[in-house]
Image (cartoon, rainbow, N blue to C red; front, top):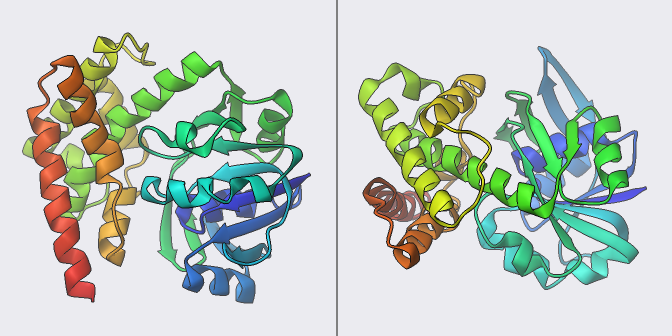
Length: 297
């Protein structure tokens, strides 16, 4: 089995390190520093109190494509169009792609050979090619059974789902992302810290509840009845994790605020649902991300 992982960030390194031994794995990215680090010393994986180096093949996106049976897309949402324009050359004749990304619209952009998925695995990127697993989760795939089985063999809690279930799971994850990402990035704290600060916890819950209201207005069945309980549980389970948006801010990289908060605000506008907290968090993150990139330059 040949697997290509698009993205050398936290999730790309985590999935790549665990899949080696069960498939011929290549990590593909545009981030030269990450690719070079993996080439030189493999993926450094910290997991369950142990640290090990896992040899994984890595290459830059512009280098000759490796045809794969399965492509797992783990890049940031703002990079999806770049991957979509090159995806066909990375897939074998019967190959398929799975998106495990944050935000909305990624599967549609990737095209007809792409399947939806959702994962609640947590990971923190400590440096180029260096990742710390931060909370186990469930990975759902609306894809053929062999793709589900492959991830299960590699140690993931991988489960099949229908496209409708995948959409609900994606929106469920979006609720947690809205609640956790911007507040942790703005406050520069790990996820669990939101639970320790009453005002931050209230903001987290309100953002999650607004996102859930939009999903329900779209008649999407989200996988929980109470978004407040859900987002607190996610924060508790990933307490030591730095959210992806916080990690992006620290690196001076573009954030996914448009694909997360912006997408919720746009959908809410179409449906006439009020989302004031998500609107404010979106604008704050756009301003903060622009300032962070300017300072790093």
